[in-house]
Every structure is written in structure tokens, then in C-alpha cells.
Amino acid sequence: MDTQDFLKPDSLERNSFLWSEARLVVAAVALLLGGVPPLRFLLPMVGLYGLVGMILTLAWVISGAASAYLLYRWFTGGKVLFGAHEPLDMGAFFVSAVSGINLGFTGLMGSNFGMLIFSGRVLFGITALVYLASAAYLWRRWSISGKKIF
Image 1 (cartoon, rainbow, N blue to C red):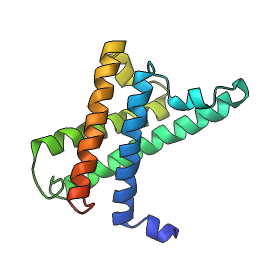
Image 2 (cartoon, rainbow, N blue to C red; image 1 turned 90 degrees about the vertical axis):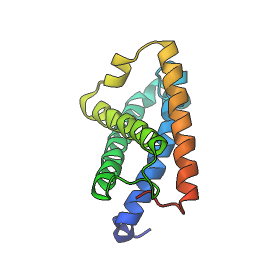
Image 3 (tube, rainbow, N blue to C red; image 1 turned 120 degrees about the horizontal axis):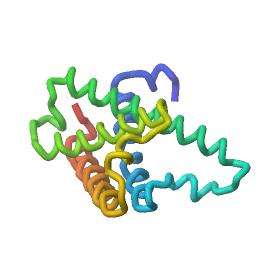
Image 4 (spheres, one colour; image 1 turned 180 degrees about the vertical axis):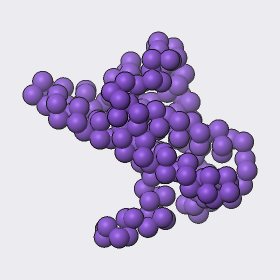
């Protein structure tokens, strides 16, 4: 993909949405694992610990940027999602946006504020289910709308 194509609003919107969808699923898995990023389980070798940390930090910052971009597009696009003003659309979208921005701050600050506020296995499990439900709902609405969000 040419970098000029990547920077076009439609491509940025699509890629930000896809990244956010994947992030919701990965974050749900992490919460079900007790708040540990799955990458830590996939690459547990001590020698790779620094590399894994850098990859996670970069992914978290990208998550924040993608969510901020989607919020910007929503705001400048008349606050409409999938061609409508549906409460469930808004709820699922804000779950995605807030969790992504939280991870962005985690990458920049080194501390996950959401996990500090909502700690505990039960809350992690409930949050994981909300993330998975939001991801599935957003995916369905995106697909039905012809893969257009705003």
C-alpha cells in the first residue's frame, strides 16, 4: 500500500476501525488472563522482555491515536454512526473509544488508569464481556452499513 493511500481519510478511518476492533478482542483476552497482555504469554522469554515491552507500548499508543482519530471523525461528521443516531451504536462506539484512549495513555504514561480503577477478577471478566459484545456489535453494524462508519 502506498503511503499516500494510507493517509487518505477513508483508509485512516477503515484502518483505525479495524485496529480498534482487534484491540477490543485482544484487551478482552488480556482481562480474562488477569490483566496480562497475551503477547507476554506468547513471548515469555526473559531475553525478549524489553522487545515485548516496546511492542506493547507502540501498540498502546497506536490504539490511543486510532481511537482519538475515530472520535474526531465522529465529532466532525455530525455525531452520526453508521448513518443513524442509535443509542447502542453510541454505547459500543464509546466503549471502544474510551478503552483505546485509556491504552494510549498507558503507552505514554506507563500506567493503566482503567485497570487501577476497575481491578479484580470479576470486574475484569465483566469488562472483557462488554469489550467482546461491543466489538461484535460494531463489526455487525459496520458490515451492514457497507463498511462505512461516518
